[in-house]
Length: 300
Image (cartoon, rainbow, N blue to C red):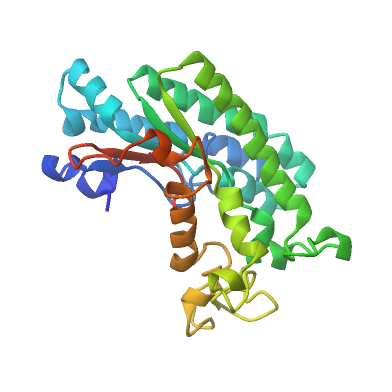
């Protein structure tokens, strides 16, 4: 596993850090936390935005690659940088506070510009290979299916997911891909790989039984009852919640995050299958153990 930044910060564990570093933070946002708090009044947002994570990355470079600019530029250039998935919490937080989808849609350009700005800064530092994921289909998330009730026509007849929320995720992803194409044009020697988390997940929601998820795609394994086994006031781990017997037959773990079985299938679909643009192994040979990995994202 890639060691977490705070796990080795100050420990002098230079050997461990040579594996790379993970700067992801649970609940983090792309845009500055103070902005999200302002648009979702009453929320306390984790101060681990993408800009904060980038700052940690810069601070840790001496332990990763040495003290010289040329050494670090070479190290960064040989590393695979996973930049995301991030941006989901920028929307989840205001949506959970009652903001309309139309209101939250207006934040998408700012979220995308923040992500793109960070990518450009990493490229200026020497990054040559970056994987940039899009967002998941949030309309299939049990938490949203529980808290947002729609008319019959608001649900996808095949999957049961909320159509408007999934269209919102697609809007974010389309804008992100447009911006990534611009980066490719300006940096023809840099490999920018878009990871299609949305469709890698949708293959499961479209045919859950085909992939072994026989207990359904929209009901959480760990929860507190109801049609989707999700209750915002009694989340997985609370005394009132129960755990399913076979988590590997569920897509959703706790109504917000997926199960290990679902993530495993998505991961395989991305790195060995067709859900990246360009396809991952068509351009990137398997890295040697001397190369590092850096991840900046929200924690999933």
